[in-house]
Every structure is written in C-alpha cells, then in structure tokens.
Length: 351
Image 1 (cartoon, rainbow, N blue to C red):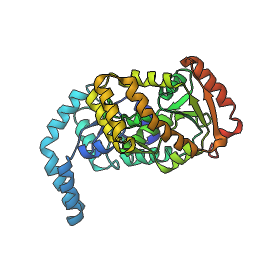
Image 2: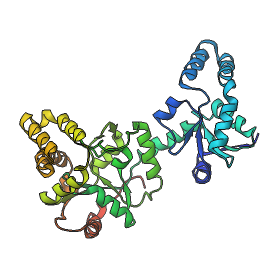
Image 3: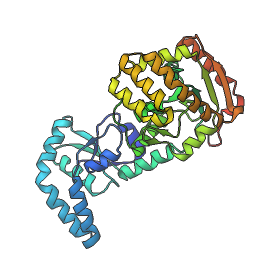
C-alpha cells in the first residue's frame, strides 16, 4: 500500500503541497474540521450511528463487518470522486483518531495509484493542538474605541505594515453587534472558530505583540474561551477617539448599501434596549434612507455599552489616543508609537 503515516509536525509542511481529505461523516465535518480540507465520508451520518450502536451492543467485529457492508457498494464511487477532485494523485487523509475510516480511504485510493499521507492520531491530534494554542499566554495589545472609530481598518493597515494581528471578527464572520451578521457568511461552530484562531496564532512570533480588537465575550454566536478572554481583559488597551461625524460617516459607508429589511430586523432585535420610540424613529429613517439619522440614534445605545465595557478594564492599562481628522497611515504610526509607551506591560509569563 502506497501510504506513509505522518506526525502533526510533518503535516504542517506537507499541507502546503497536497490537498487534505477528511474521511469522517458529513455531520462531523460540518461541526469542525482542519481548514481547507475536503470531505469524502467513508460512513454517512446515518451509517455512523448504525455502526456505533452495533459496536456498543455486539463489539468491534460485528461493527467492522457492518461498516464494510454499508460502504462496500460505494467503493468505486469514492475512487471516481477522488480521481476527479485530485488528479495529481497525492493527498493527506485523516479521520477522528487516524483509525479505520482513514485507513480504508487510504487503501481504496492507494489501489488506484494515489500517494497517501495519513495523519497519525487523526483530527483528535490536530484538535488537541488547536485547543492548547488558543489558550496560551499570548502577548496582546487591544484596540478599543466606540463603534465607528475604524478598528478593523486600523488592524488591516497594521498588518500591511508588518505587525502581527488577530482579527476575531473576520474569523467569526460577524462584526460583533446586532448588525454584525448582515452580509457575512454563516458563522463557524465555536470549535471551528478555535481551529481558525489557532491556525493564525501558530504563525505568529510569541515574543512579539499581537494586535487585537477589544471584543465582548460573544461575537454573534461565537463564545471566546475563558482563558483567552481573561488574557484580553488583562492586556493593555489603546482607547481610540474619533469625532462623532467621522464615526457616523464610516458606519454609513459600511451599512447604507445593505438590504433595508435586514437593517430593520437588526434594529428590532434591539427594541427592548432602545425603547419603542427610538426603535420606531430608527426604522422610519432606514425606510426613508436617512442613514446618518438612524446611525446617530443607535450610537447613543452603543456608546453607553462601550463605556460600561471600558470601565471593567484596568485604567492603568488604558491609553487614550485621539485620532480625529488623522488619516489611516498616520493613525497607525501613532499606534506604533503608543505601543512603545506601554513599557513592561507588554510581557507575559509563558514566553
């Protein structure tokens, strides 16, 4: 059989050369997987339940026989699918523990000439790595500021300037407010979000600062793990200030083109917090295209929320930076100067 068992360390370099194939069921893959992997299930969701039940009730031999009975008729279809998707004939495969399902797929494809690298320990090994990676004591510097100060744009520019950044909202496919899901792709599961986080973090130098936006514990339906959120809470924060006019203009640029019905739905989700009158006024403004008016209306609520969150941060670790009227590049230069003013606060005990 033309197969090589590889470690996770070997996997990191080989993934740059060969496509990755997940042999688990559609449901397992949908819940979480190695990013950029393709799914070729050996057992479907329903078949996996049948085999798992049989394993518990009658043991391994009966379950194995049943598994082959179920998947056997599809062997040729799996081979044809793989030939179509991976014409070069070289792949990396994994299943949950690097066991029977990935071994079967490896055997099937080796029989038609594939060169197969099978991940030792499977997805379980990969997930153990990502779980630990997002719980390390990273050296973070938070970008704070009220809604509309342009934190995301600043992060992106800092990355262009060679700084290490972690954009949690981008990984979560959500902008972190009642309006955050509009125009975004579906959110990943919490586990998949952590996989994506870890993939970003592992490429960073642990001895250097990682810029990150100050977030609430929840980003849409994503919940940041306890350790990382506590690390964020204890990390230094730059509180960016912009004029209200600039903030309204930026938000208008981002949201005015979005479907009115989705904007209205987002306002309605805030109805209990906004109150009936302000909700009605905001909806009327959206309908009439008075974007600056409804944005200013909602900023009253969001500004109070931000101030509450800011007060929970250690005031000794917060520096205010007024960037009113300053362009993006010059703003980043001020941020980099401010980073140097934190002295010994940008350290950690792990690295």
